Image 1 (spheres, rainbow, N blue to C red):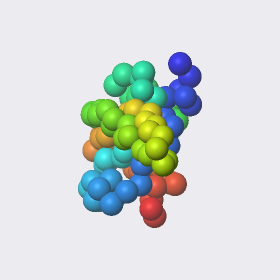
Image 2: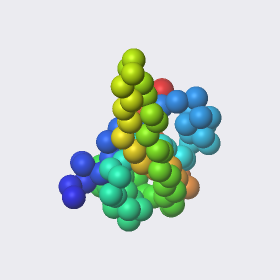
Image 3: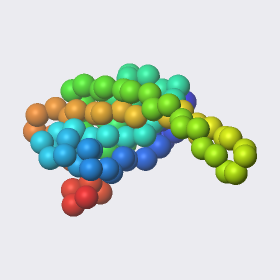
Length: 96
């Protein structure tokens, strides 16, 4: 798997904004088959920051209805990445 395929997008929600206030924790939506080692390598290579730890969680897709038809959204994975002490956040997340 390529490094650019591991990280899908940064998650910017109220919860992740509060977590990011410490200046060291980032949250990303990642590929469902990526493990912690893949995520760590991708963040270090793409953003140039050293990673201290990675926590992952699976978000299960919800059931949605459109009239009498029922569909299901896809499951997805998110990763909380904690940077080492003294490492700066990437530029695109500085003001967000």
